Length: 194
Image (cartoon, rainbow, N blue to C red; front, top):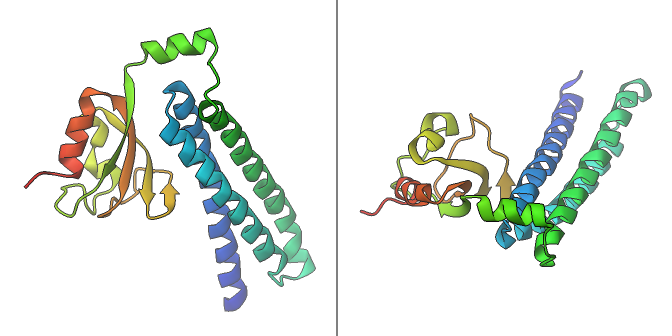
């Protein structure tokens, strides 16, 4: 594959991965917003749904304007269909979050689950003096140190689905879930007082 086409192919792969990862993250956040009855997470899901719509359109336009030969382009048909599926997943996540945003009374079983849950959600910014800076999530060992699980990393206007090798940067906001006692421990790690 010549250099220019290879770069175009790599760009298509990157865009698809971002579309897929964002829609998967939305499902995680939507269920968390529902189970924890958390409006802030539900609003994040709605914001991400708008981003996925834009990502999906850009992805399809990129594939359609790729200029690959007919025999090369055939394989992209399946990729376009996967892009449509990822966009539908994001729509479904937004519908789940809408339940929280509308204040619809949860079913009795769900309400009991919410009441019994000892979990909470926290949004914790990462300061320059944090020992977490430039560490991967694996290296940071946040669950072991705090009992909190990182659901997402908010970086600027993007939300990143965390992976063990995701690096934590100054200014990131860690969206984490866990027992209430772990919130202070996470804040001390992410934003230590001098």
